[in-house]
Structure formats: structure tokens, C-alpha cells
Image (cartoon, rainbow, N blue to C red):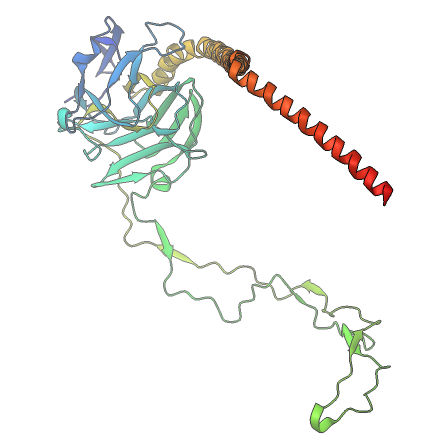
Length: 441
């Protein structure tokens, strides 16, 4: 086992070229993987056989890229599938060392629901049986499902349980390649970067529930009964004016009891109400600052007797496998430039020399590609509309030809017109007769 890892860096279609470097009497392992063949990656990555219908990865640079060969990565290729792929390296430990996990991912398909994260596994993992329940140390990367639910997951294993970060970290949701970096330091602090820019930092104990809280509320402390938390009160000196009318309706003074009103039969007579012309609304005393205000009572805290600091938080002793254990509704994500190291500056430099070089040109190519696709769709829609109009014209033209070519129907129409003319002539004569008869009458 290697106690300290300088860098394990590999791209999807790459071959290992490792060198040993002596620095301050510590052996650092430097492993760089260089592109050499399309099929070479299959020798280093193992597909799980835990279930027969896992989605397949392929080596591709996608639809837009800076360099078609150098930008090739592992791409998901089947929709609505689970994926399980992993690669093994010499076991190492991050005890008393910085651990940097870095990779790039491009959701060129416009992912709607699916994972884009990586996992670090112990050396005991059976790669051919890797699945979603396999024990892992670290899960890190973007997870997207639906509008607004896009975040960077950082799940860390501690004492047999998985703990997810409580701090929400938003991930990128566009179609460009993005660089994700997780840094875990020996002093129990962490940092998350996206595109080499810090997006979150803090203390592991504060942002994960690894340990019981350091402080708890004193179970024997109670708020005093006379503790006054009212910021403002009604002025006790304020009195309602004597002429204040706060009745909205009053009895109509002009109303009189009917003469035939029988109180025995009809009950006590009550006159109708009318709006009070002097009504001023409900009177309320004015509000003043409470002179006895003591502020909000804060429950005093004490040291939690169950809390015990653990200097070995997130120290993993046999990290040996990096895996892609994912579910994606819409496939097409491309993973590349995986890097494990204990050097933060080196990780940033690698990011700038991989993702940093490609990002601008890739974005320009993506925008050009999308513009071309938009024009293509518009042209196809236009051709479809023109074809539908032509088909509609052909239908109407065919009907007219059928009408002109039917001699029996035409002769039938002639006979019908002749009969209609005869009928009109007959009615005309009868009308004349009726008129003459009417005149005679």
C-alpha cells in the first residue's frame, strides 16, 4: 500500500506512464495516462455484471469539442439505464494528507434527470459485482433531477454510515464541460470548486453530521416566568376619549313601534338599525416601546458529554477504485480528466491545462452547432409545412376532376335543372291565376 499519493491522473482513453519522484524524503507517485487507442480503455475499466441490463459506455468527444481525440471521454450511451463501471489503481491512504478528487463532466444532451458523480471505493471491492449498494468512501459530483433540483453531492463514509453535506451547493446545468474538485484536508476542513472557482468551504464537523454536537441546551435551564420578551406594548396611560363612537350601527331614532304590535304575540319590539354618523372605528390604545423588554430569552448551552472529537474523520486507508455508479434518464454525459492527488496547486494546474484549454473553443463550437441545428429544424419544419399544403391542394384538385369527369352526374344535374325550371314555370302560372282570382273577389 502506498501511504501517500502525489497524483493518480487518467483520461478515459489513455495508457499509464508512471514515474517516481523524490521530494523531501517522501516518495510521490506520479501517474499520467496518455491517449493511445480507442479500445485501450476497456483493458483498464471493468463493467459490472451485477445485473445484465447496465447501460454501456463508449469513448467519444461528443458533438462539440476543442480536439476530437484529446477530448474523448467515457460517454453514457443508453437512455433510462443504470451504469456501473470502475477502474483500479494501487491502494493508498489519505491519513494526515490532503485528498483531492477532480474530474470533468459534460452533459451535452441537456440532462433532465441523472447523476454525474464519481465514487471512491476500498480495495476490497469486487469490480464485476459493483452496484449501488457497494460500500464506498466518497461520492462527489453533480446530481440533477428536474427543474431547480440541481446540486453537488458530497457524501462521505464514516463509521459505517453515509453522511451527505448539509450545505446546498448548486451545480452547473448547461451543456458545456465543467470541472469539479473536492479537497479534504487533514485538519478536517474541506473545499469544493467548480471550474477552479471556490463554491463552498468549511469544517467537516459543521457541514456533516458525523459527530454529536459539541454543545447542547442545558436540560436544567428554564425561562423565568417574569421574563418579558414583548418588544412593544399598548400604552397603559392612553385612554379612550369620552366622545369616541365605536358603534358602527345604532337604533334608528325616527323609527316607531307599529300601533298593532302585540308584545305577547310578537315579542319585544326592536327598532331597526342605521349607520352611526359619528362612528370613528374601533378604538385601540397607541403602541409604545416596552420599557421592561429583556430581549429574546436564549436557552443556555453546556458542553455535550457525548461529544468526542475524532482526529481521524474522513481518513481512508485503502482507497483503490474509482467508479461511475449512475442512473440517467437521458444519456450522453461525457466523463474525463479524473485526478486523485494530495497537491491542491497541482490539481488546479491540471484543470487549467485540460478543461481550461478546451472550454472557450468548445463553447464556441457548441453555440455554432446549436445554431446549425436550429436552422436545420426550421428548414425541416418549413419543408414539412410546404409538403402538407401540396398534399392538401392535390386532394382538392382530385375532387374537382372527379366531379367534371362524371357524365352521369352531369346529366343528372341537367335533368334536375330542367325539372326545377318546369316547376318554377308551373308555380308562376298558378300564382298568376291566384292573383287574378283574388282580384275578381
